[in-house]
Length: 47
Image 1 (tube, rainbow, N blue to C red):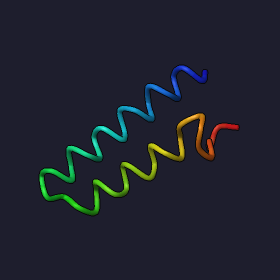
Image 2 (image 1 turned 120 degrees about the horizontal axis):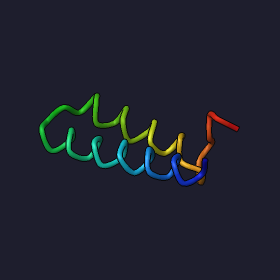
Image 3 (image 1 turned 90 degrees about the vertical axis):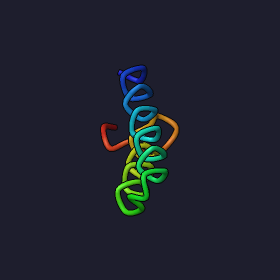
Image 4 (image 1 turned 180 degrees about the horizontal axis):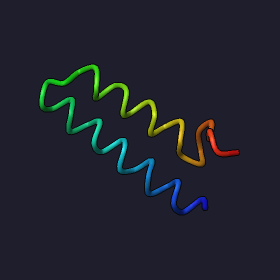
């Protein structure tokens, strides 16, 4: 389960960074924050 959370977190953070480059500031910030929260190193919402 942790491996899946890592993959999901990485995808969310990368998508957030790409959104920032496309000038979608709000979506970029939201995706990065959610990615950090979902990741096993963050405050995981699944545990």
